Length: 269
Image 1 (cartoon, rainbow, N blue to C red):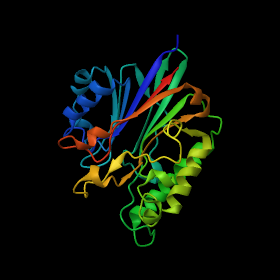
Image 2: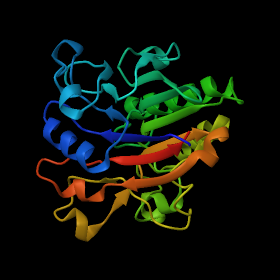
Image 3: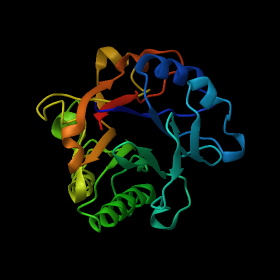
């Protein structure tokens, strides 16, 4: 009988601030693996009691003070994978790769937090945007070296909504960072190296799909001006293993919510 593996990804926007919300998410969605981004927590202050609270015995993390940071919790033993990278020469804790030993063989999960890129989509005027494009191009080039990669999953806040219906208005957001043509082209090239879109596997490309709603909206739910910034990709050998997905939209309305919502994908391995 196939074993199911439930992988959750969430930009938590501070792991210490939202420990209670994380427990609520885990209780509601029952994941086997939790990948967090923007933990905003240096390693020496990471809440080491949290794995027990979540019912997960294993945790790996890379963090720094005040911003960025990634973490992975797992019910299954795991180890840091050698393919964990510091991209474009910056040690800014934006990537953690882990390897799980599963009945069908090892599975590697890449947890990414891609730079947001600031507000101005111009590399000369905005160094943050240049950094973002360099980061995505470097990731694309890295995975292009392994086009036949198997038994791998890539998740995280990739900070780009690549498709027309990944944003509330394609035309109005073409000059807005996260949906500019240069960004969407780069992300598509990265995905095309060896990955299959695990969310669009379930939701056709002509349907709206969001995972993020801005804090700036007075009533985020009524305005519904969302974007799909959070992604789950699987290698092509795992396409047939995808069994279900869930986007916990209600979490955006919780007290002290992150502006991103948890995303879950289930695989039958």
